[in-house]
Amino acid sequence: MDGCNDIKMKKSRSTFHTLFPLAGALVYAVLFLFPVAHTLMSAGFADIVKVLTTGYYIRIILFTLVQALVSTLVALLLGFPGAWLVSRFRFRGKRFFKALCSVPFVLPSILVVLGFVVFYGNSGYLNRLIMAVVNLREPPLRLLYSFKAVILAHAFYNFPVIVIVIGSFWSSCPSDGEECAALEGAGELQVFFRVTLPCIAPAVASACALVFLYCFTSFAVIMVLGGGPSMTTIEVEIFRQARVSMNTGLACALSVVSLLFSGAVLILQLRAEKLCIAFEGSSYTKESHLKKGHKAACIYLVLASLFILLPLAGIVTRSFASAASRTGGTYFSLNAYKALASDPGAISNSVITAVLASVMGTAVALSLCTFIVNNKGKHIAGTSNMLAMLPMAISSVILGLAYFILSRLFAGMPPLAILVPVHSMIILPFGVRTILPTYRTLPQSLTEDAMTQGASDIQVFFRVHVPLLRKAVANSLVFGFAISMGELNSAVLLGMSGFPTIPTQIYRLINAYNYQGACAMGTLLMAICFLAFMTDQS
Picture (cartoon, rainbow, N blue to C red):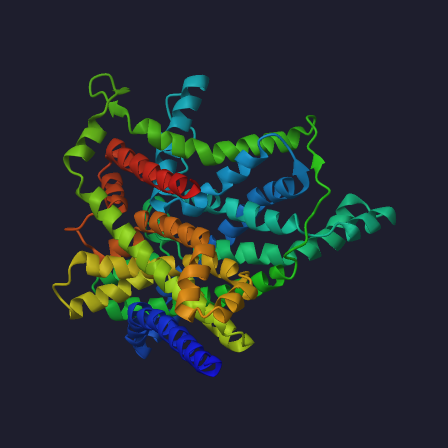
């Protein structure tokens, strides 16, 4: 009898651990690998040569690289002091500051654009304040629609990545080397460059690669704040070729070039991340209190917090301010919210899409994580993890292009049948990064105990693994929901005018200079995402 039970358990184990990952891999192949491969293969050799040899496209590639490098450097300069503070000091408001730094992780890029237009624009709150204080007639700060605006927006969006990634790793670095160097007479700068910096170098490389990747594939920030053709990046040119010139062949060739760069950066980021894992489990215990007299640190914390909060506060404030046609001022009004209530189509479209996409993306992520955890081979697990992270290297613009090309082959597809798969694949790598670390820490003894009591692998998965993974799965669903709610790039390229979403409506209202309406929609988007995270915390 025992022998029969062992055979049944092995069959169950073999069947479940084959079919469940296979289902996820099949969905991943159909919804991501096939559309992207079809797009890349649609790029003709002549078009690729044209992109790599024509002066116009070379300038676009160089500008894309330059703005990403400069944005990464500025984000590093802004975020590094914060990483040092949160890793080495205890101070009042530290928890609030770290929580505040997590906001841009889930902040849709269109809200970044909107916040900067409302707060830093020629008629924005900052210029109004300076003009009132100094009694000026013309706005002194003209930041928008320039290279400075792009860099500033990217820095705002990404410097918290530097703070959190480097700060978390730095706090786990042992202090023995620093103490020994100090005892030997080394100064603070010598200790930093000879001991500290080599220790945190993997985290610096990982964070910078991640920021570079985000800036390299940026779309909405460039489209709105770039200010013209001179600020064209590869992603913007893909959109222009596909939607304006209807030259999908050239758009596909540009996608190949974009993927070569972003794929190389993603490989570097994953390798740096592996080096960071070697320090997991250790903790830096000698945090010191930040002295009240440390004015520079206090000024930094206040300015960094305001840098994040003020553009978002500007969105909320502007949503209640209607322009007075006679006086030229503004007055409190709920007109924008009344307009939203009268036409809630974009809201319902976004919510339905986000719910379906987060469920699909998380389910596929869980399936792929099951395969990775149950295949301990270094090369198999590493390759699987790399494939699961691949959507991070494929920008949402390129993914939107892939589905735009396929939608012409399958005319008449309902919008949800296109948007939900696109969003679910954008969500997928975040789901894997959320679930996989927890999945790897599940005690093997629990599985063995359940199996010895006669439970099949299916029962072990749903009765043991899933309850222990509940928090990670919930986090994946919430992050996926927030990402889908704010996804603009793919929707703009797909051009679904008959199926508006909240981000596309904000984009349309900004272009129509209806900033009150755009801010009301943006405030609603922030509120929905905030409520989703509050639900997850409860």
